[in-house]
Image 1: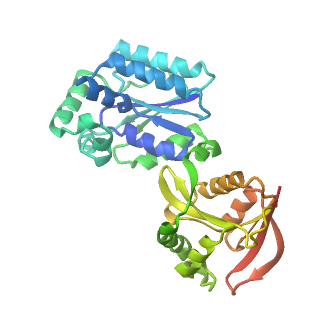
Image 2: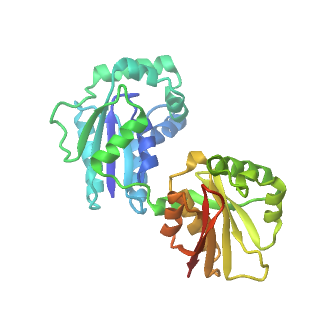
Length: 350
């Protein structure tokens, strides 16, 4: 299993960059305060031995998962041998699995870091930083007492990058890291853990309807097709949801409703053939592979179905690519809707 070690001074952005990197890779984030904060809360002070023991338990358990690796953040005092020993033991642990260690060192101007010390995200995740006067003074003490920036050529890693992120957004830095080390994107296995389907209740139809309008409105504004789900009435959605042989499911990722899928058949007696209509993802969650995972979840929920059917817009290559990636093939003739838009049918036979 691989390890991405992000090091740097206080409030340089290690956790925030790690959060962004987790969004675009198959790596999970374990930032250093995830263990520090509960230990301080319980003991009333920092207990390094307890923190390290808890971290070791997390490392050992995580290595049994199917993820590509872990992102771990650490404030490394380069003039302390104990920190060198800790990093060596940690990297040895991951390399013993056959994994690769990637080291990212972040540096930024002190004035910028002082401002970052006040950000909502930092204070939400790190309770010990919420006394801003004390946390700022502690940060300055740490960087004057210890050497928190490496010297040129000092770090022994074959995969190492040093980034001055004084003027860079966290997402930019994450993209730089992913590109530099050719890190894998989010895997289907990871997404399967993050996405689930939840049946829509009758009282949740209004929210479903609002999501459907928001999801299909960009296509409606592009093609102006009269049959668009963006122009459906809520009564029609209610009618579709009320059919005993059809079901709506919210697509939920990381606890948030990001879209919906309707599966079923117009014939109550039909058990082997099922339609997917509609399937939609809210615009702000599109292009993340969520639709693919939702379809796989639907397949797993209805193992008795041997023929799946759907239609889509010929002029939307991303949609066509999605369904073909799922195993669907084009069938039948093209169905022009207007001079801008043509519907095509897809079918998957198991």
